[in-house]
Each structure stands twice: as C-alpha cells, then as structure tokens.
Length: 350
Image (tube, rainbow, N blue to C red):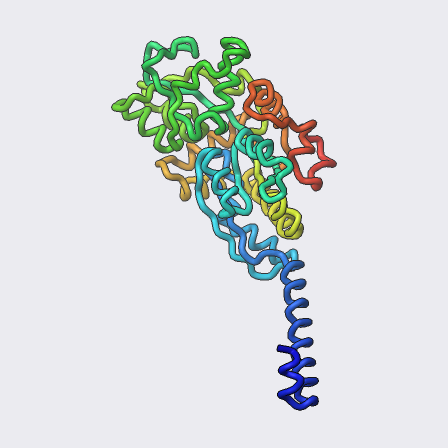
C-alpha cells in the first residue's frame, strides 16, 4: 500500500499527508496521556440504612464532596449516591465496577479485602473509619431471654448472611456464649432482610421472624413496641469498636488522590456538623429515613455514649482476628495499616 501511495501521488502531497498524520498521532498520544493523568469527574457512592451511615447521609444532603472537590481544583464533579444494605450486595456492586466508594460493615470490607488481595484488578482498600454504635438483638418471642433460648423454629433477620456486619457480630456473640468452636451455631436461623424490612417483620409478628439483629434507629423503634424485648447489646460483649468503614477499589484510590483527599475532608466536615449541630444532623437523618422516626428520637441516639463517628479505625483488627480464626477469611492482615490507605497511618488506629 505504501508503494502505491508513492507511485500514484506527487511527492509534496505525500509529505504533507505524512506531516498531518504524524501531528494527529502526536495529538492522540497527548490526549490519552492527559486523560490517564486526569481525575474522575463523576463519583458513584453508596450508603446504607441507619445511624451508622449518618456522616455519608450528611455529606449527600449538604453536598460536601462537591464542595471539597471544587476546593481541591477538581472542578464540577457529578456525585451519584445509592442506598445498599448488606456486605454481599455492596461487594458484588464494587466487583461489578458500579461503585467507586462505599460505606460498609467492617466484616464485609475485610471479606472482600482478603478475597481480592493480590489480584490487581479487584483489590480494595479502606479509605476511612466511619462509625460505632450498639447493635441490639431484639425478639418478639417472650420465651427468649438469652441466645441459648433461640430454637430451631426461630428465625433471626439481618442483612447479608454470614458476611454482613450484623452476621459477623452475631457470630462473635455466639462464640462468647457457646465457645469459639460453636461460633456459627445460630447461622442456620439467620434470614437476609434489610433493616427496614426486618423491623416490619419483627413488629408485625405475622412471619417466621422472631429476632432482629439491628442498629439504631431500628433497634430503638422496635423497643417502643411492648411486645419486643432486647436479648443482647453488642457493646456489652465486644465493646464499643468501629463497626462501619468506607472503602474503594485500590486502583481508584491510586488514580484519584485528590478526590480521596476531598472525600476525607468532606467526611470530617460531616462529623463536625454531627458533633456541633446535632439537631440539624438529626433533621437530615429524619428526612432521609425509610422509616418514621422523630428528630427527638434521633437526638437521643446521637447522645448515646455508644454512638460515635470518626475517620480513624478503632479495633477493626478485632474483626479480622475473629474472622481468621473462624475460617471466614484465608488471608489475614498483619495490622490495621494493611487494610487502610497510607494517609491514615500516622493516626492511632487499631
């Protein structure tokens, strides 16, 4: 073909064409390099139900990520939020490439971290800690006073069987009650339901659900019903530790350092708003809630000593240690810094 061009066209025309082609090739290379170095203009995030996700709910309502992305020189950024419940669902969305940043229970994150470790295309990393609170296992069965009273006909609602936050914390409570070797004793009784659906099932009393292991405000709302009693409070057994974290694909974090910094700044501002303007934070939660809850009820939860919000992970390794001993993960992090971005490593995390 090249010989045909030489023989069929004047030399000057050939030279001009070669110059144009070279210039176009150079422009394409420059554009590709420019795109590779540019940070994203659209971010897809997920949050869940309940008080544990309040900082993310505040970030969405107050458009804090947009604010800090603009301050970082990233220009206008399209921020798209979705609500997902349960570690399995969130991890599937992350692996499918439909999420960039997600809030999740620490066990769900650790599960995916361990599974994807060493697989460059799928690796994930923690961006920040998120929240801590008490989880309640409530029941509508008056005969149930402790974990030992759950029988084969009882069913316990929780989001995400085996890998969700509630599922793993329940296993930890069971291990404390029945011995570590029996950590999964109540697993056959668990049923996957979102927290709002679990509340409806437990208080309605017309389904097989006799227990619900849940977080505020659902745990508080259930106990307003005189037929519902609390079986156990997670803080009494495992302490007040970080329950939810934020994570992202490692390749996204490495390609978008300014966006990650903007996200952390936005989350810190959300935490400050919750601490300094709890009434506003409570109103924001009420507006976003899928269940009917009052500002006063949310304020009582925020004032609970067990409810706190921080970007610094606290005792997340407790989950990793338990999950490794239980065989839930095959790759165990050496310490918390293996799980989270370097920007957090100078903090007193655990």
